[in-house]
Length: 242
Image 1 (tube, rainbow, N blue to C red):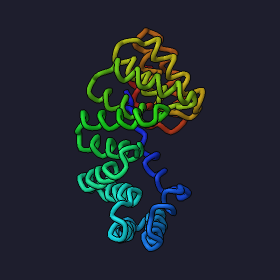
Image 2 (image 1 turned 45 degrees about the vertical axis):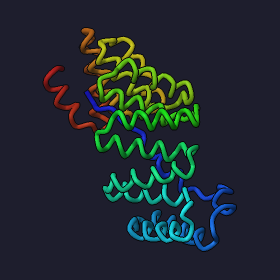
Image 3 (image 1 turned 180 degrees about the vertical axis):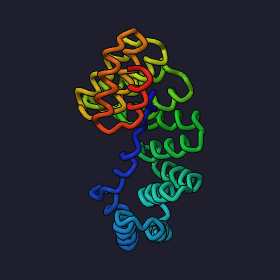
């Protein structure tokens, strides 16, 4: 079975510059350093970005966005503990900073602190009840703890907020597979494929679900489709099972 996915791209949305908080609350020199850090981050110069955001923080120690962004750059460099410290400072300054809680949850999840991650995703959801990615990552974390029913509930909420969230259908289908609800899994994998017709993992997992219910032809058709899309392991499945 192909592994679940988690949402990580949303961690970068804090870099969008247009919030009045930046210009209204930040010293102009701090704001200039902040923007310079964004430019360097987008160029892949994470160390340079950290230096600029550190300078912004020196000028304005209450600059929550600078702490959060510096945490993102540290995460990129593998300094997850340093990232957590920065996200923690950001939420101390701004307890309603949902994205910082979300990002801290992601860092904790990388460090296998699953309970801490769930707690942070929950806090992000309390602040923003429509935070689809927070529900999704909380579900993925519960999934990893084998709380499949809890995971399914979170994926379902994700889908209610964003009906085009293909990965949420895929992960919910995988959790249903673990609970041996193969028909429910097939339905979810099918929906993921309708949204993204090139979703190779969904074809592979739908094929496995079909195989478990005795639909060998359907399984082989799905694995063949995944192989046609470039999924190399499907060739092994086809060779062994078809």
